[in-house]
Length: 105
Image (tube, rainbow, N blue to C red; front, top):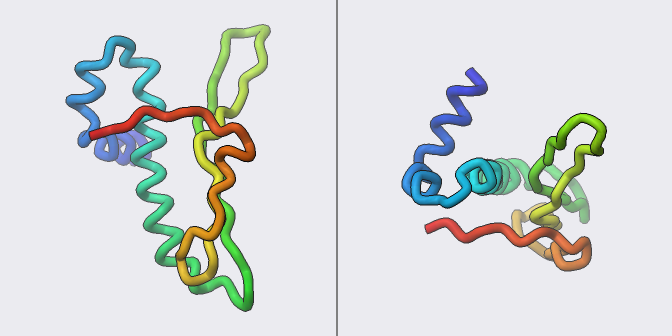
């Protein structure tokens, strides 16, 4: 079920991935973009459940797996804070030096 979800989520990126010089490098960025859209929908739907002056912080990125003997790492691509009405009140991406992600058409 999980693999089917991933495949379906990547369908809109098929042409971009097919044209990419390095498909395996582009693939995690495409998946990040698809998952970011899903997370944005979830935050919008659920943020009103946060009471008082509560906020929702969302950190997104790509887990980079490396060869044996090297440390894996997380490449942050976004870090956003939303109020309980769903409005982004702070974009902390620059503050954490979030990596640059490609633009998808």
